[in-house]
Image (cartoon, rainbow, N blue to C red; front, top):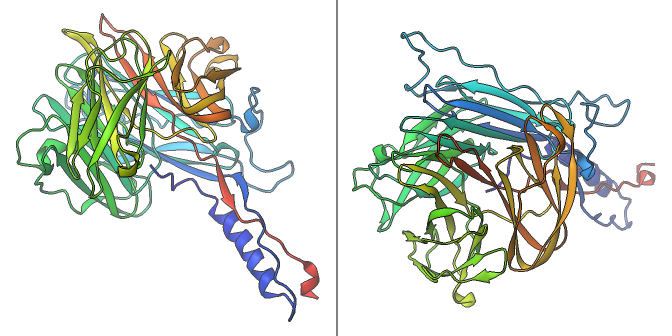
Length: 516
């Protein structure tokens, strides 16, 4: 997914203006100055949107807001301002604010009184230390906001909700996403036992207009009320997928969200009356290969869902990248995906006690077609089950962070594809105290390495994990958070999405002599 909200528009515009002036001011006959090599600079503004966490009366939500330290240090920053000493730039900020909801569900306390929405999560004041806030019950609103200055590069917010009982029972985790104009969600469903809501959150001061397309195993699902959905300024709109089509219920559906105007944050809340509930995050942009990292070692059921948005069919080779090497699962060696149709395959007994990642690639490299993909992963058996979703994700090119990790129940999975790699992993200071630690991890080619024990010294509260490539090939990462409750193995999986903390801008060259 594109991170269009991360920008350095003002700086890039200013540099471009200076460069243009120098070129136009060159004297007759003088050679125009060469274009300078572009420079990468930290972004100065980043935006995020978090959907309504739950409509359950018993929901308990924890927000964790965090900006990693620049330069890879482990000492928390002391200042919260951007720019050098003596700079006249305004103080850096990173804050989320409630967005109005157009939903008619929730928001009412017992006794018929309107519930009071909780305050927005606490503002981050310095890089290097997570800040947490709680919001319980059905009145917790959608949130939208931005970080600026020194707090913008890599700013992330994790939304973690525990629903101990009811139809939405489960541990729901989501890294709040950057607003965009195009999202793909494989592994959604319109089945009777599922309640899948796509949440559209508009963080801007102007209205957005969105379209939703649904694709089943036979192609486009005939739908209604899916075109031109208005999303008012600074508001959120939840849409129940099963109400959008009159066709027969489908176990596996691909959802495509686009905007005609404006931009939105998008995520799908999925609740299965038997398996549990969690968020479905967007898949990576369509590509001929896909990596889905971080399948728990004790997964009891895994379903792969894939979709081809282009005109050509895709024949995909399925491989499991384990801690000991890359193998072909016995349950399914390949998957044929027809153009414009959703394909799914169940992969029972996939991991067999080892953390693993799934890799999809063209069976014939000469006939590669772009795909999007996601996994539905189940842990537990019988009545004690829980579900999570793992979308295809891109490699970490510079840096990526997932917040809200706990002293127990956190496992980091690192997968190297194509070549061995080294990455630096930093466990931040805790939200309530603790000393950050950094570890360099070597991942062998074609393997997945599990890191279950990287915890800040003297940890109090929760902490963030940041992954930065050091050398070698591409690395894909995911974090599993397990919070067992009354015998139910509640868990959630978040992939590491590169934070785009820097942006490439042209370097300005100006010979003041041409101004004489």
